[in-house]
Image (cartoon, rainbow, N blue to C red; front, side):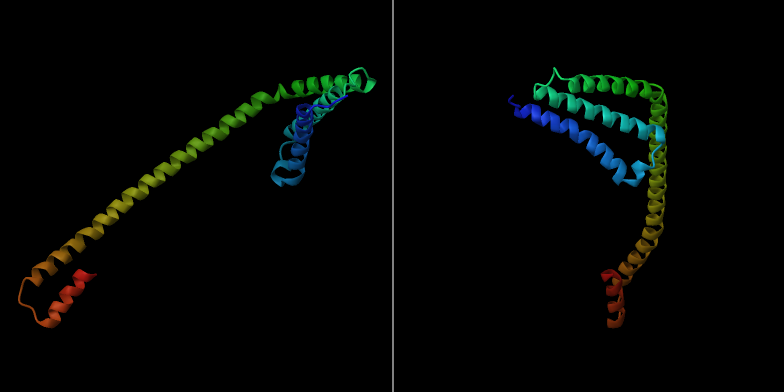
Length: 163
């Protein structure tokens, strides 16, 4: 009865998935406040995967001729069927919910793009409104600098260019 390493890794993976699901449901409040139908689906799925792991472990240990193995296989089949039947009516609702969420993302993306475009237009307008008076000031200061100025006036014109 030698358990191979790859079988052991597969068994650990089978057991870790339901533990991760149940831990997440317990640990994260947002997941715990999900609709009861989805919560039950996750619990059924976790139980199904756990039973698959138990069956795999018994196969690895070569206990396939025991009552426990037959009982676990039967439970696995029943839980699998119940999970599949429970999932069937949920699929259209889940797809509709997914579609609505995607439409919200597209709508919000468009709103963000429109908002960005308005901001760019406003900034272009603002730049124009600031640039033209500044151009007039610097041009006037340039013309003024070409005339005979006192030292104090030259310092003032220089300050305009320095700023």
